[in-house]
Amino acid sequence: MNSSIFQSVIDYFSGMPVVRIIDLLLVLYLLYELYNLIKGTSGINIFFGIIAVYLIWKLVIYIQMPLLSEILGQFISVGVLAIIIVFQQEIRKFLLLIGNTRFMNKTRKRFLFWKFNILQDSNLNIAPLTSAIKKMALSKTGALIVLTRKNELEDIVLTGVEIDSCVTDQLIESIFFKNSPLHDGAIIISNNRIVAAKCILPVSDREDIPRGFGLRHRAALGLSETADAIVLVVSEQTGNISIAIGNELIRAVTFAELKDILNAEFSTSRK
Image (cartoon, rainbow, N blue to C red; front, top):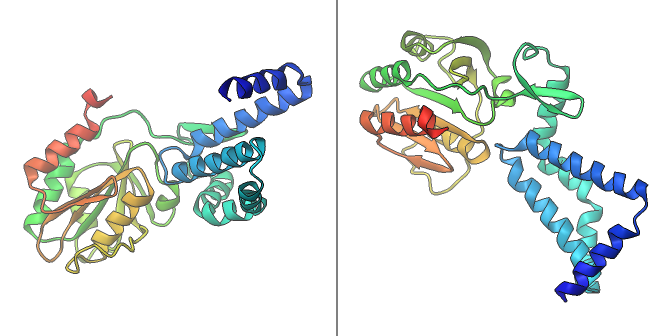
């Protein structure tokens, strides 16, 4: 069975016209560029899922399984509509960035003829960050801080107010001061800079979140479910520190544990 499939592939390529070879190479190139664009986001898992369904559909057609191929064929026939629905956030981000000039002076990555921001290879200066979090925890000042990793979360940044400043404990504390106009929402720290404040994060709809947790914790978990980012939360009621990372919410984190986690994620040794 395996040898016959292998021979069929060889025969397919050996008798392939030059135009079909170019067509195949262009498709592979487009898939590769699309992968580079969405890697580090929630869309990457959906991308692999769509590719898997398509390959399975081609396989069942080849081995002549009419019922299954018909079912998968119906799914593929509405694939464009499904992609628009599933990737609506990524498509929105793509269209926004084409016409947006806020990021034109930064290092960018390319998708065909367009260029997009990528995360600069710089360490996070955790000293002012942990200092601010410690002070806010002791004073029970609520805070929501997003630390980007592979993706700069431009769509989230666009929901807030642009800051573009160095990371200092005084600035972080002033942003989350209860009378500050920017305290409601999250700040985004990317490339060791505070990029924006008052940003709106997606809220998790998971049912296993403790009832005592408010919108800050749900928003932190919601972003960790959909993006490659670390979200720090300071509770306004208890002063406890929580970390949302990898679809998991770590509660009641001590200052020592916070430093260890941030050092492990952003130190030079990790690279």
